[in-house]
Length: 182
Image (tube, helix red, strand yellow):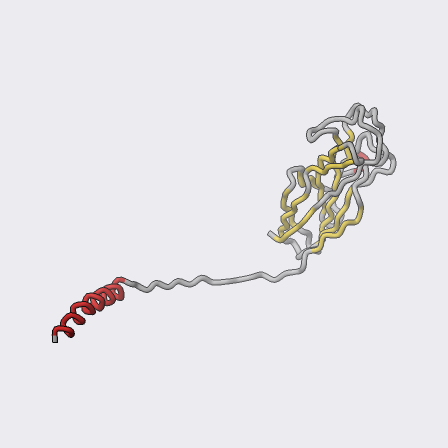
């Protein structure tokens, strides 16, 4: 009989603790709705590379490729061309654009910098600057189309400057851009 009393004395506190734990626990539930909008796939197609043309190493003023209107460019070569991309997206949707605000151009031993500037157009209408910061937003047109033009300034440093005394050579680099629905 003593053994049963010892077992009960040992087990009884355990049942009390388990019973209290069950009483302390409370149940809470919550729910949230889920949604998704499925739309036209985004496309970003390069139509033209950025080309400043042939520029003199003694150019003492800014070399600028105007993305809104190439005829307003200064000190670029006769073969200069704006970078151009076509965006395909849903109709009148907001797009987040990220791009290289600065591109390192090298001839293998020397560096130049393209300080980029973006301009955009809906269905061939007038161009609006999208800035130089490296990211921006724009809204596609009623057809979902959008054209991005890329230009900017060619500089010896990461700040605005001229090309006076730049070593001669062919300088190349890569400009990157990406888009995503907002």
